View 1 (cartoon, rainbow, N blue to C red):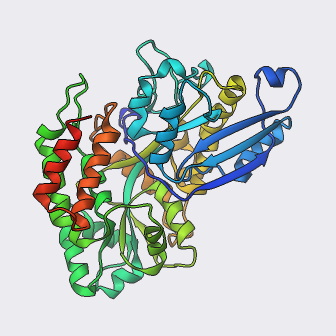
View 2 (view 1 turned 90 degrees about the horizontal axis):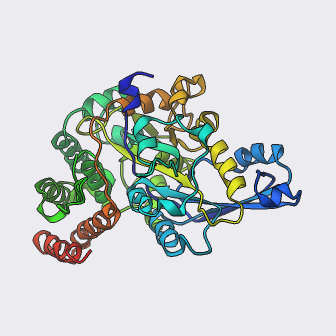
Length: 421
C-alpha cells in the first residue's frame, strides 16, 4: 500500500430516518454461547451503514444460535446523546456505532470499551486505526467507512438551467475554489429562481473539513472563537451559501422529500449520501455524481463500531464487529449504501474498483470514491468538544437562515454559548 493511499481521506457523517431492523442468526464466543444457549446481539447505528438484512443474514447463517437486533437512531445527534448518557452504565447495545465528529470525545472513555482482537489490527488506513488507539496502545474502535466527497447533481435540472449535464463536464464546471462554486450556484439561481444546493450547513461542514485546525488544538488549547479561519467560514456560509440553499440544515422531513421534488439541484456528496438520495427519491432518474469538490478535496463521514466493556455479550459482539468491518463486508456495505471502505485491502477489490451505481446513471462511484479520497490533503483535528462547537456554529447559521438573528448578532451569540462549554 503506497503512502498516498495510506494517508488519504478524513471523516465525518450525518443522520437518516429512524428504522429498526430485526433479524435472526449470528453468534460468537461469549459466555452464553459457550454454554450452548441462544445469544441476542444488539447493534446500534445511525444513517445507513449498509448493514442490510441480507448482509446480517450471511453472518447469521454461519452462527445459527444467535439473534441480531439492529436499531438505527434518527440522527447522529440522537445516537451521541444516548451513547454518553449510558456509557459505563446500562442500556447500550452490544455494538455501538460512533461518528467521527464525536469519536475523540468517546476516546476519553476508552477504558470503558473492549479492545479490538489482535487478528483484526492493521486492516485499516493508518490514520483511521491511529485515531482509535488510546494512550495505552489499546485499539478500541473498528473502523467502518470514510467519506470522500464529490458532488451529486440533478442532470435534468442542470439542463433546464442551461448548465452542462455530462459528469465530466460538470466536474470541469465546478473545478476550482469555493468562489467558483458559488458563482455557478448564482448562475443556476438566476436562471431558475430556485436554490442550487440543499443546505447551507452542508457547505459549512465542507469548508471546516478543509481546515487543519477548527475549534481545538491537539494540545487541548481552545481556539474556537479566536480562529480567523472559523470566522471566515461562518461569514462565507452566511453571505454566499445561505442565499443559494434550500434549507439551513439537513435531516428534516422536508429535506428528505426535497430530493425527489426538484427543490434544489446539487449536494456535497460523500459516498454514504448516495444511499440516502436513492432511498428517498427512488423514482427520480436525473441524479448523477461528478468527480469534483470545491477547493480540491474534502472528507465528510466515517464512523467506528465500539463494544462497551460491560456488555452482556462482549466476545460475541467483538466477533460480529470484526466480521462487519473486514474488507469483504465493507465492500458489500459500500455496494448497499455507498459507505466508502476504510480498509486498505478493499481498494484492490475489483468489486469496488469496477463498481458502478445504476441509480446515478451508471456513475463509476467506486473509482470516483478512490479519486476523491486521494484528493484529500488536510486532516482536520477534531478534539473532544468538536461536536459541541460545530453543532453550535451550525445553529448560528440556522438563526441567520431563519431570520431570527442577523449575521453579526448570531456570531456573538455563538461566542457567548461556546465560552460556557
